[in-house]
Image (cartoon, rainbow, N blue to C red; front, side, top):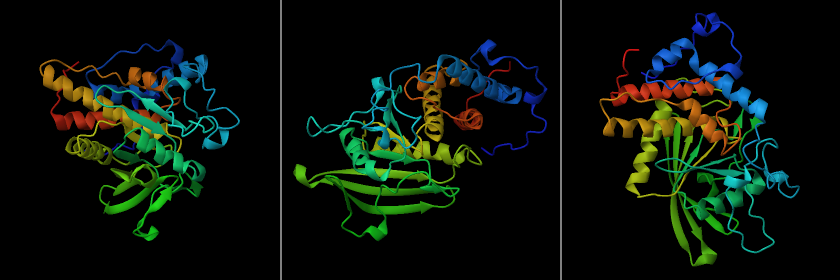
Length: 328
């Protein structure tokens, strides 16, 4: 279960009459399989991209802080900056210290997220400050530090070879407690203790999940890894009574990051619906959800393959949960 179909030669999408994305009319569905067979995910993604192009991808808010000369070097990609209205603001130590970091608060129904870029060497201390300030206890990394010969993310976290004393990032000391590798599911789990020696030695624990099975601008071979991660993260947060946002990042913090958030939020919505109205069909609305996420961070879900993967992952999880769509 969860294996993607890579054969596209007979895709019904190729047989459909061309329609302008601007004329596309969205209709919620309770049957994801039928939409997948009809190529609806591709149509929806084209329509979302069309509207962003016509209206301007930065039409949902100002981005003054991200484009300030003093902050430009803190952006991994100069075209991906947070909106001012939902950017994460660092707790500045003094009036002269910048509160800028390339990260966005994404609001969900059951929990919030921080969508952010892969840290740069110079932004790593700010990254750990953000984790501390926002009370994050779960961090999800959806990229490798290097992919296809290109640097995608600075190694902002200690490894075993860094020694038992940990590493200091600004005024935060980070120590690796344990690390587990799950090669079957392509996940590395690291548990860290963060300490602020200058603040009375306050200590916090954070669990860092790194998923290695997701190529840049692409999708995993199957949906099982991501769905398993969602279950693991939810379990971890429940056991520790965590109420802070889930911090998610890839390289730019929009493609893989946005895809994960769409999958997680929709699965949460489906679960609640099945508990409250088990006899009623659930209306899936990834189209509206992605549009809403793009109002909080530009370009969320970056590729048509990623948008389709949302459908596939949610379909697989709905089967696991026992959701039976009506015949329509």
